Image (tube, rainbow, N blue to C red; front, side, top):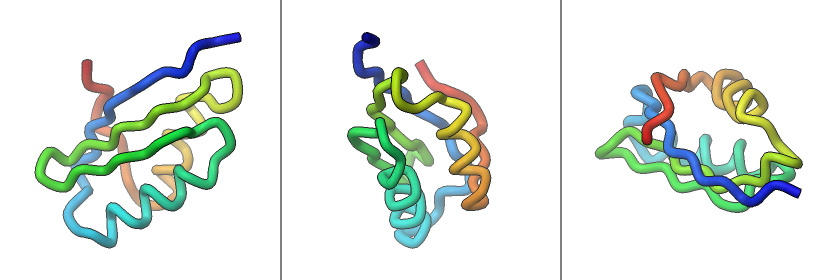
Length: 75
């Protein structure tokens, strides 16, 4: 069983509260994601997830489907 992981993603298209709501809602529906926090000033998305239940590829694909491209994963 894998431990819960935290990742911070750089998502340059985050610019407004609509973006925040869209990202938080779409990722929040995925089984295995425990928490999503989107920050407009830093254009980042912090995701706490269980890698046994959801992969980074699924997270990336969901964001892409909503129109948000991940620039990079931040340390």
